[in-house]
Length: 255
Image (tube, rainbow, N blue to C red; front, side, top):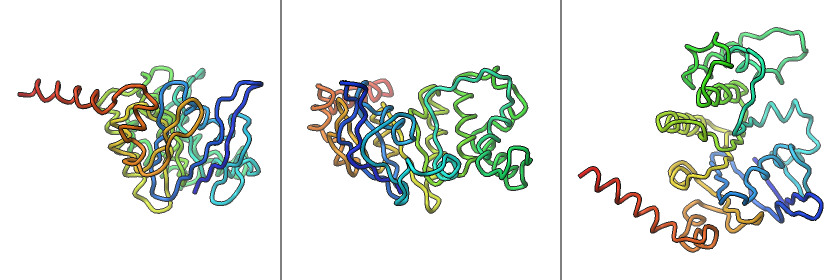
């Protein structure tokens, strides 16, 4: 579904990403993993045409840089890490924006299909009771769920997520990731997401791209990417021992 070849992002003499190669196939949840400054968010911005880059990004064989924005929006849904809402749009109005690319004209109203998909997205994310509430009154976690509902309403084939649970408490982290897992079970879908929490990556991901200092350390099946050696190389610590130590503390507390 998505193929990235020899992708590079440079600002003057500063190289942010260099020679990135990976692919996302139907049914896969590919996790972009790495420490702060590895280039994960920049990679997402490049793939979604948010920053200039060298190399190629193809979606279902088509060069994304040559696709019309409306066609990209019908196929690829993007959930950013942070959202700035400056106007008192209601929750439902924000979610309805996910259907904008399907409208044949600026002045055409919502169709029955639009209404069905918007309501379903609100129900999936638990935001239906808030549908008439101003987005300015929402917490960060609630706002994140509103924009997740927006991309669900968009009904894309590929979801690209930049830290989708960064503002959510534990309960909503689990709910959102489970929702994404269920969404992915439908035919013709795939997910690419940035994640910092290695435990969440291992639980929900099928494949991974491990980045460090703008380069790919490893790409493939997640268990083959998150090896002790690879993580030691990237994080300069024994991540396996650290994780086991944290787990042992929980086990002790439960006894």
